[in-house]
Length: 112
Length: 135
Image 1 (cartoon, chains in turn purple, blue):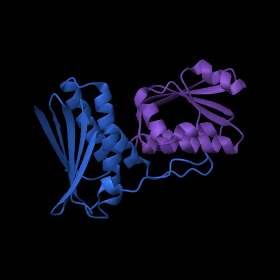
Image 2 (cartoon, rainbow over the protein chains, first blue to last red):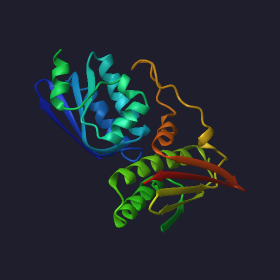
Image 3 (cartoon, rainbow over the protein chains, first blue to last red):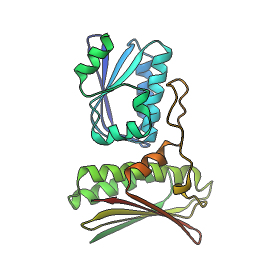
Image 4 (tube, helix red, strand yellow):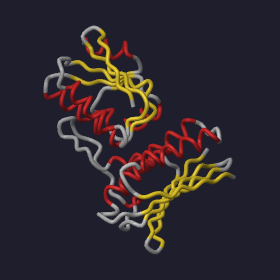
């Protein structure tokens, strides 16, 4: 699991690659909490290079989204592959966190 | 028809070792990435549960058998932990708001959704769970 960040406009894009599961969730969780408590209020998870996410990984995403919401920020997701999308729908996460097909769509949604 | 088996102690590194084994097996037999990802995700959920809830303080063995033919890929997981039938586990709530949303119970729901067949049997002191993904 690899997590890299970059700033686009005032959005912090978090590129996640590999697998977000019980093996990687500890380290990934620490990183997401650090990001959610950081200076950026708009955070976009780009999951293009994420192979799959397990329930342990969903807990990491949920923790980040909740922390951001408490601090008047927002977490969005884009470019999830079909397996990750399937997991987001099955778990009901797609009704808690907005999911977009492209980064541009997510950026536009942050601005409205 | 191709088959492989791995037996190892239930512990901290078990999930990672089983997933490595599945990944190598699938690469070697040129199985689609979509299939190996679904199998590894399901193993992550099932084996994490067994290690977390199934054994208490007793060290125990766990075995995994992989099998595929032209029609399906199957995984059989056996452990000597407490009896637990994941097919009968209650479904978690998946509604609510971000603030109220709980975090538990999603793993088995994901496995049930991703796999085509799940069967459980208690054979003596062994839990035997079979997961099937059609190819």
